[in-house]
Structures are given as structure tokens and as C-alpha cells.
Image (cartoon, rainbow, N blue to C red; front, side, top):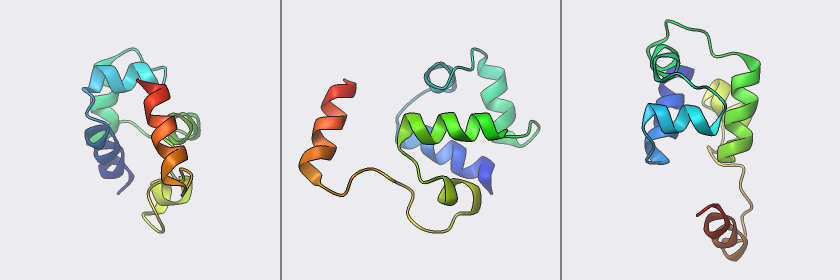
Amino acid sequence: MMKDRLRDIRLQAGLSQTAFGQRIGIKSRAHISALESGTKKITDRIITDICREFKINEIWFRTGEGKMSCANEDPDEEKALIIDDI
């Protein structure tokens, strides 16, 4: 389910719900919690923001099919992207 993939992305990023929300423009920890529990709908805008910020394949995020990451396959470029984020 998409709510589970959302939680997986956040945990893989090593972020609290608050920090994750800040990265995608959601100020409330409770909002992220509601998205992860399925009590609030994950909107198209939220999906777009998550996929852009965390380099997630949107098809995987929506359906679970394909690869999770849409990041560049070149490991040197990927390292450069990670270092730039630090």
C-alpha cells in the first residue's frame, strides 16, 4: 500500500516524521502520521513532492511496481548527489 511505501521512504531516509514533513513542505508531524496510517489521503501534490525530494520512482510509489529509486544509475554521480545534500 502507498502508505507503507511512504513510511519505508521516510525510514530509509533516516528521518523523523517532523523532519520528513519539513523536507516536503508539511509542517505538522500529525499530518505525516495520518498519511502513514492511512487516515489522510496522499494527494498528487504530496506524491510529486516526495518523488522529487527523495528521487523516488512515481510509478513504484503509486503501485509498488518497478524500482524504488529513479536516481541516476552512475554511482559516482549518485555519490555527488548525496554529498551535495549533506
